View 1 (cartoon, rainbow, N blue to C red):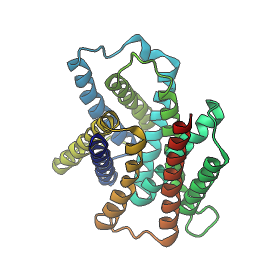
View 2 (view 1 turned 45 degrees about the horizontal axis):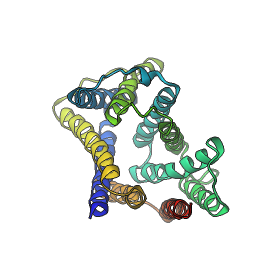
View 3 (view 1 turned 180 degrees about the horizontal axis):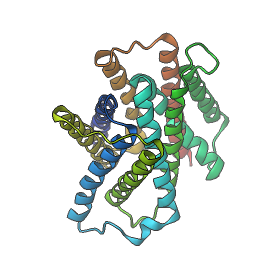
View 4 (view 1 turned 135 degrees about the horizontal axis):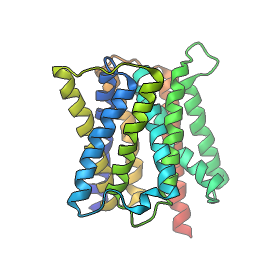
Length: 289
């Protein structure tokens, strides 16, 4: 029963992320990328900061200056910058499909940098997943969109974040970690604004509703994914992360009029399939040890 509840929370989290992505893409019609990132950072930091204080915890424990937290925050900045930029420039369905390769890059990074044992079957799954990314990006082909590389940057950044999380001191809570990661987005966004010299845009009436939607859906997704991991077994709950691509496909077609072609759908299927296989092999390996 707990696993089913965990799966439901994970699915809700992926729906929340897909809706947050939708609001971000809507904002990108009028707002510069740096301002969108600043809005997300401010809204998220405010929410998780309040949650941290409500739990009687410090907003700035000494441990947040540890090397692991600093590396994690760098990954968060790179991931957010890459994905928000990708949402602005390429179809939602394509950006979301590429993002699903993140667990494969985490497995790759764990093997290369953390000395975790990865057998030939999981190496093969990683290669298949990367081939799926290539099918979506299509380098050297007529349909190649260089802006899709921003989604690849997001994958690398989020993989760095997830790998560094394993080394974060245990006395740093999830809410403290989330608050600090989102807080760092604000100065990073203003630095990007200074580099690009894109002017700030004052939100109008409807813009505030979209901004609230982006922040609230992001917070809902963060809360739901933490709840999912605590309620159910991680090995059972994690595969439901891939429901995000289904929500993104539906939203992309219905709201943005996207028409994913065969190569994009095949690439997405390869990424999801290889990811699920990798999770299954990891679960089997842990059960045997």
